[in-house]
Length: 79
Image (cartoon, rainbow, N blue to C red; front, side, top):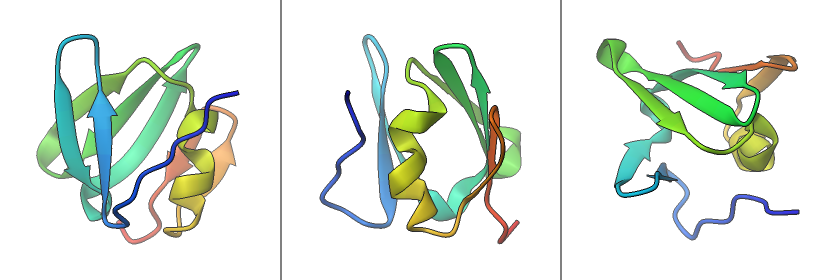
């Protein structure tokens, strides 16, 4: 099973089919799971769609204080 591993602590590298985006963890407000995709809701109303499940990011984000409140949601309690 694939899990998210990254060297940096303060950001996520979101990879899509043709693009990659660096997102700071502090800017992530909510993550919503939708079957095999995640939608990252960021500050300022921006959204990023990723072709991975929440479980893929779960361990890394829990180390940064994120809470899994539902099988389809992870929230950042700092927002």
